[in-house]
Image (cartoon, rainbow, N blue to C red; front, top):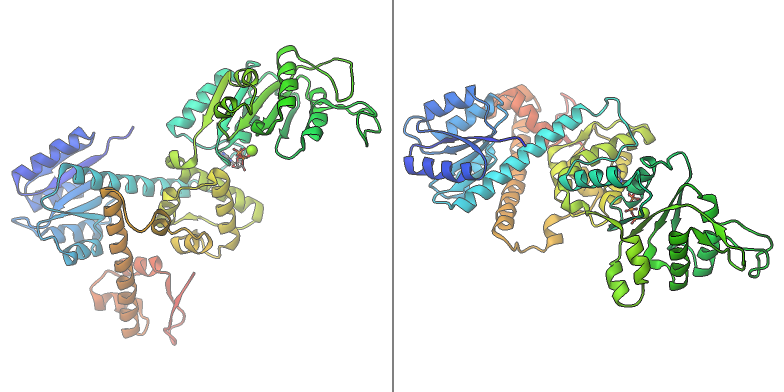
Length: 475
Ligand SMILES: Nc1ncnc2c1ncn2[C@@H]1O[C@H](COP(=O)(O)OP(=O)(O)OP(=O)(O)O)[C@@H](O)[C@H]1O
Ligand SMILES: [Mg+2]
């Protein structure tokens, strides 16, 4: 695990040491200094992930240091510490590129929440950049994506169980990857060269399912005009993936238990016992234990199935995999549609990482595919995502935050949204005053041309022609 480094710039000794202790205990590598000059020097020459910067320093004003750090485009996040807790101060700091602010005095808990949040955000941004850079490198579309610790555990368990003939029970919400993992187990097994058959117990009526699985003899029921072999015959020596076993009738459960224990079964309507050697991988998203208690599922079959259970966590419990999965599906959608989309903007990615994804990976895949189809820009941005995928985090979770962390995040988002509106109007005003000339507009407001252009891009503002400097919003 990477250790993140933090630089504290504050002239008050007690504050420096208090922050140092809290952040060191939380696992950060901490350095501190007491003057603006020393701080700026270190910031420019060091490689810090985060700087905690006091506004009121004896030699240089904190805002000036922040400005220089941003002008030099250092890859470091800045959190401003201010004794003057006012929205103006905070907005000013955010405007100059600070990630967040802390108003003194603050508690150790507050500090850790804000610092963790900034580091999480920075990591996400760095990962997004790396993934975007790797987008068009040679790629294996068949791979199962994910390296969250929970997924690593699953891979480790699968590498042990796959080569055996043991039954595996995959338990997970819809769209968590039960089928893809079942296929993976098969490919790692000694049966890999034989059939992998998928049967969804949801899609058949009881009688049809029984005949599907075990076959039937001629005359077994109306319409059975000839003998028909079932899946247990076709899948012999191979693997059968039984999806949603909670829907099996008690009668079929009994037959299934028999074939799993003795490798024997009888086709519907027949007396002749047939033999089959099939490895079963079963899946469910219902609580089979409770069904056993309610008499809806045979306990003996449950124990037979439950020899090697694997729980597939919902996507919201493995959020760190979302960026990699999103890029995986982006590549796939680009390949399938022939479109070229270069990636996701940082705020779009942040929105995806924070979404709860009730439909799990399948939902993420569908959303990304839709975004690629709809996209007419190089990068999927926040607006595209919001337009095509009606997520409103705050309205979904209810507009009243329930923890301090949520309250702070709410405040930050609110500030940012309000600030963004002002920033856009500010750019438009400058451009209108200078007839759309970017160099003059940037001079007019006292910004470097490159920074001004970056802001134009951020707000999707472009100049249509020199003669007609009307601003267009590119969506
Ligand atoms: N880790 C992963 N890496 C890449 N693709 C994945 C991953 N997990 C799932 N998918 C893809 O997401 C989609 C849903 O996965 P899958 O069908 O395996 O889920 P499921 O749990 O069987 O869902 P359901 O319960 O609805 O049948 C599939 O297109 C699958 O290929
Ligand atoms: Mg499935």
